[in-house]
Amino acid sequence: MKVHNPGFPASVRLRRPDADDAHGRGLLLVDSIAASWHSGPSRFGGTVVSFELADAWH
Image (cartoon, rainbow, N blue to C red):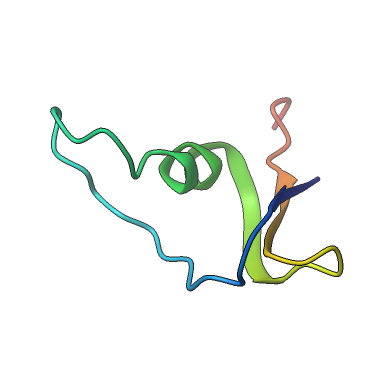
């Protein structure tokens, strides 16, 4: 699966936000359900995060 974020390419990093932080949970959610993920520049401009979902049946 791929998620594109428009704009300038950005550095993507996994965060551990505080409960009252307004941002920083997207990759935390992806990391919790994905078997693997990576990020890089999107061919449409901006940044893309690509990930494979973990197999729920194993």
